Every structure is written in C-alpha cells, then in structure tokens.
Amino acid sequence: MEVKAQHAVELNLADHDVKPYYFGIMLGYNTSHYNITHDPSFTNPALNKKIADVESGNTGRIHLGIMANYQLSKRFDLRFYPLNLVFSEKKLDYLMKSNAIENQRAESIVMSFPLQVRLKSDRINNFRVYTLAGAKYDFDLASNAGARNSDNMLKIKKNDYGVEGGIGFQFFLPYFILSPEIKFSYGLSNIHARDADLIYSSVVDKMNSRMLMFSLHFEGGGMGR
Image 1: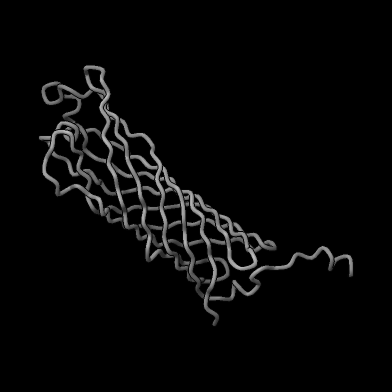
Image 2: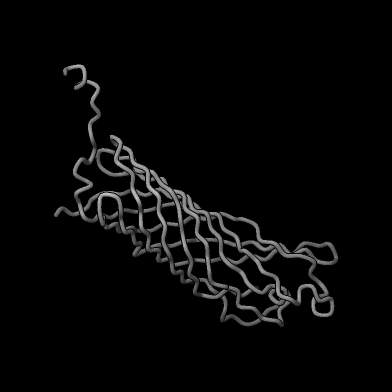
C-alpha cells in the first residue's frame, strides 16, 4: 500500500468536471486561403483577354478570443465564443497571358461566432483528449464590398457562415487547464462580390474561405453547483 501511494498521481483541479460552466481565453495562429470557382467568362477569349489563371495561396495571421463552456454531461460540452477576433489575409496570384504575375491581397478582421459541441474522453490522470464540431457566423469588419470601383480591386462581402471540426487535448495544471487545439474551418457562403467591370473580379465566380487554426486555450475558473 505504501509503494502504491508513492506512485499515485495527484489530480489537479479534481472538482473541475462537476462545475456546470467555466470560461477561458484563446490565442492562436491561423493559415487561410480561398477556394476559387472560375466564372464562365474565364475561358472566353473575347471576354478575358488578360488573365491566364488565378490561384489562392495560404497566408498566416493570429486570432484571439474569450470562450464560454457549458458542460452538458460527462461526455459532451457546448462551447461559445462571445468575443472572437480572427485576423487573416488571403493572397491571390493572377498569371497574366503576358506571363507576368499580379498579386492581390484581401485583408480581413473577422468577428467570428462559433457554436461547437465537444466530445470528451475519460480523464486519464491530468490529461484528456476531445473532438469538436460546430457551425459559425462571421462578420468581416474590414470588408470592402461598399468601396468605389477600381480595376485592381477584389471585393469581399461582410457576411459568411460555415462549419468547423477539430481535435484538442486538455492538460490539467494546478491552477488552470492548458488546451492545445487544431481546427479546420470550412466556409459555405460565396463571399466574392463579383463585378464584371473589374479585371480581377470578372474572371472569378465564387470564393469560399478555408482556414486551419492552431489555438491554445487557457481554461479555468468555473462556477460550482
């Protein structure tokens, strides 16, 4: 019995799972790009005399937010982010028929409102793994959809919605929980405000956002029953 006691692991935050809800902060890094669908005019030489191809490459930015977590049961949590700012930049490379390459960049500062369900494993000493899935609504504070026309402008709509999925790990420390998480965000809305009179916009029909997010959640506090 004495030998077993010496090797027993002390549980940090042992009463955490009986708390119905708690809060945390989140910091992270994201990479994002657009999934592009060409407009039919792209392959029409009479309508498209300059652009041979267009592609979107990944670029990185940061995100931060405040998380609220409600424990539905031993296995399931409901998570919401009352404050969630996502900074991103989408890069588009246009290969011109002259073989020159023109770059377009779309800066975004997004207020994102995800609602997620989290499925948790059993706690193994001071460790746990979880998966999550949910939906989100995004509002782009830096949208230029209402700006005046310019030949080199690509207009982005303010509103977007999509689905998310990911996996994470909870490490129970003496005073808080550290949760590294990786999540994929898949935009469902066409956020391209197409303008047939603009060179770079006319060849693109739809643009859907894609984002990979690496986050650190610092979870703690909570309210007792």
